Structure formats: C-alpha cells, structure tokens
Length: 282
Image (cartoon, rainbow, N blue to C red; front, side):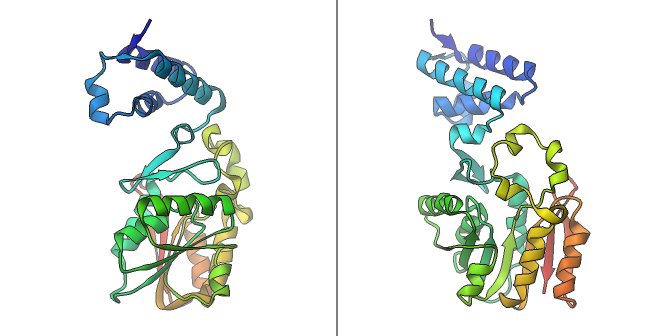
C-alpha cells in the first residue's frame, strides 16, 4: 500500500530523533529521492509516493542512523556558493564557513587586472572553482596530494565549466616545481588536532578523509609547511587567506609573521562569532 509524503516524512523524522540524529536529514533526503524543488516538496505533502522510492528512502535513513554516513554521500552532492558540487568519501564535505573564506578573498582582490590565485589542498575544488567563476580574469591553480580528490575536483570543474590548472603534490611543492608565482594563496588545510578527534561526530570522523581533517603539531602542521613554502611562491604585496580552527588564530598569525615580519595580519570571525580566517597582506 502506497503512503502519503507526510506519512513517510513523519516516520523518518521520529526514527532520526529517537536515534539522536538531525531530523532535517529526512526532509533533505526525501526531497532528493523525489527529485523535486524545495517549494514543490512542501506543496505535495499529501501526494502518494511510489513504493520503490519509499524503500530506497527507508534504506538510506537506516544507513545514516546506523553508520553516520553523511547525507551528502548518500545524495552524492553538496551546494556551495549557490552551485552544486559532487562529493564523496575522498573529499571533505564543504562547510558554510568556507564560503566566508571565498567571499573574503573576493572582497580583497588586488587592483591589477590579471591575478594568479593558488588554492592549496583543493579537495572537491569548491574554493578554486568558485573563485574561477566569480573572478573570470583570474588564473586559478589548485593543488592536492590526493589523486582521488583531484579526480573529483576535475569532474566538478568540467561540470561547472571552470578553467583551472590542477597539480598533484604536497601543498605548494608542485607550484614551486613549475616556478609559478601567485598574487594570492588561499587554503582550507587539515587543522584538527588528534586530541580533538573524540569531539567530532561519527558523520565526520568516520566518513571524511583523515588526510583532509587531521594535522600534527596540535593541528598546525599544514600551516607550518605552507608558510615555509610561501616565500618561494608569493609575489611582492601578495596575500594569503587561511581557514583556521577557532583556537588557532594567534598561532597561525605568528607563523606568518615569522616568515613575513612586515606583513599585516587579521583574524576574522565567522557567522557564529568564532575565529575562522587569518588574512595577511604580505
């Protein structure tokens, strides 16, 4: 016997709540399975849903409850800066805070017409691709050590028709090897310390790639490495923009100052009032 949309949704919401999962997953996942817009979804609450869709939806909800698999891995995508990006277990699921990092870079572009921006540790490519599409005259280079991540990023760039040079290697190494100079270096590197592992939800720690999450030296290893490489890459009066953990502002600021004593650095808070970006004019 077929069920109405609101009945299917009610079952899922109660099941999620009972198992201490976010109930909004039910709305997002059912909307995905029905292939409808948000408006259509809420307008069709009394429509009947075919049994095969109900069965697939039930299986996904149960999988999410049991394993913590993120909804984005079940649907295969996440939205970022108004665009749809493919995501999978090889890349970090983009967060809203990273949109703020991109916006900050856009707001602080240098005057010159043609600029070169390097995105370090690109993952799914959201930062590089968004910058390429929002700043058409910029040359964008993106690096990642993971071939699987680069495969995902390249596919996203193709789908969204963004022109980007992808290079495989450790942080800025492939950029240095090719003697590329940049006006801006931007990065959302791994910055979670091993000590913080227990604070993370299973949807993150069991499903996002460890390479993109954790860093040695109390979460600062990636910043140390990038800052040590920056002098070989950055052009005079260039800038660097880092996403950071909310307790890392002063430490990252100090790493930049160590290499660029005359730089002007700022720690910027995110929408939740937590330190989230370090921006430096070098």
